Length: 297
Image 1 (cartoon, rainbow, N blue to C red):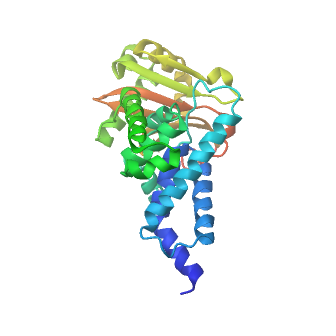
Image 2: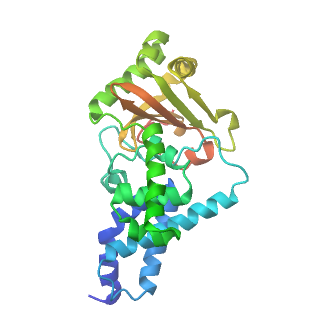
Image 3: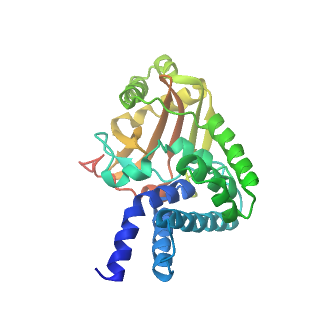
């Protein structure tokens, strides 16, 4: 086996974990793949013969690349976004695509990623690496030019925000699906009381319409407000298709082969606590929804 083949084989052993790190850091499938590709190029140029733990070395490289991308993204934005729903990973309702299993491990739902978007780049890196991938703080600290204690404080601050704004979903996916199905059944039937019954009193709905649909960028709080929005959108019910969105029950609203909305639900203790909606046509056009609208009509 040549050196290039050996390097490729070693790198492929770690690709799944690296994509998972980058996706949690960036919330973008394409940017995560770019970060992983950058790590591959750096590995090819570097002398790794003295590296004892190649996986840890590659994780550090991907984390640093992702951190730089986050900082660059912040610099480019003229104003903070009111709502930014990260790229969803869509799967048929029957199950997650095997190539996405590693990326979606540990329940990385859209609600969690939305909250991660509100963190500073340093907070996000400290939380993602430590809490999701068990990287020690003494290894995280040099990446953000902080002491291990300071890195620990950043992760702690991020953890409090995540716990407060991204409740852990119920472990029973079938039960989650039943609740989401009840939501859409009530919407289609025009039954407002049944809609409110499946919503937590403090439910939050976040919608991201992007630059093309600014009117679809908003946040609603409370069962009455969220139920009213769903009630008004009942006319879309014929176009709703079941899907797994980041591994949990959700829906794609598709017409004529084009996604109009992607809806992710967080169900906790038998009620919907969060709904995250991607309504940005520019980003929706990049999604393959043929499996959810096979007729294209």
